[in-house]
Image 1 (cartoon, rainbow, N blue to C red):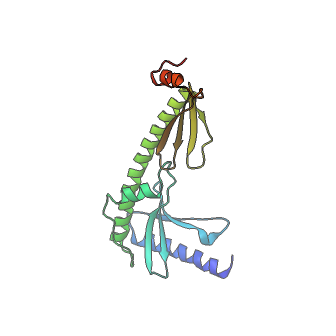
Image 2: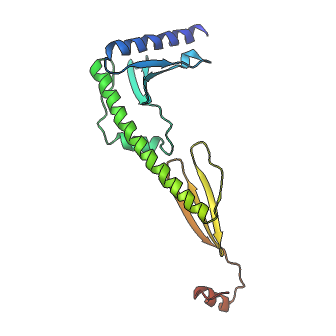
Image 3: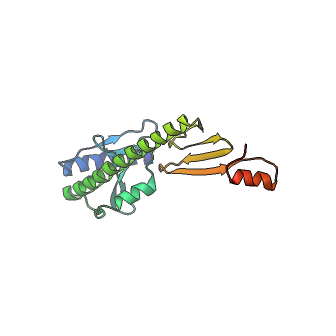
Length: 193
């Protein structure tokens, strides 16, 4: 580790100690990156993924969520955050400021978990319905996105599940018949055989 990386790592250790000395309610820990210690993360001890960073150039602390919930991305998180009053920026650490930020982020995280669970269930139900219809489903990527198609009687149903849990659906008719008025009339009257 070079001198700069060692300095950043030492600063993070000092920040964890400072956070724990000031904040009596919540405990923080340094989650070490074994390959690059200066890239270690300061996080709230426990299950809620609240991280802390200090920007020396702004002389300001930032508290943020570092989650990887299925079907919850940046836009969804910003919508949920907008429902709550965001605490003021932290220039000087105090127990009140730490508590305000952690409690704010816990509220946001709990809403995001609930939203993620609802979306996972909705998509699982939709996927089960598509499997019953005989859909060809593509591979899921790391965000849970996938697409697929069902073709029956010349009608194709296409769907795509996006990374925010949105299900896009599209129906196309694929009939190949001679271009005659008689065929048109039979198709339009649902009498084509």
